[in-house]
Amino acid sequence: MPRITQPHDDAWSPDVEAAVTTFGNRARNEILRFLTAFGPATRGDIVDSVSAGEPSVAKHLVALEQVGAIVVDVPAGRRHGRSPRYSANPARIKELLDAHLRYVLKE
Image (cartoon, rainbow, N blue to C red; front, side):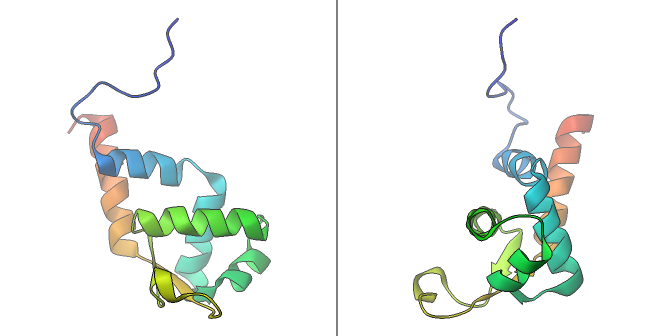
């Protein structure tokens, strides 16, 4: 049986891809849940509060920022030597979830 790696479907939008990538990962969900409840928070605060190590949290924060699920108070090129604070972006999270739901339910 062939393995599907990329759906050949016009309904599979960049937002659907971002939703599947974001919400299909337990650590990313845990980070979003923490930030929704307790953010804004530094990366150290997040590491201390979720079940993932610093390198993993750092990687997930980059991915979450790229899809807009989180926002950061310091621009990407200016973070060296600073402690940026991360916040959940509920509006974008809802957009991604809605896109995924529309895809799955064929709406």
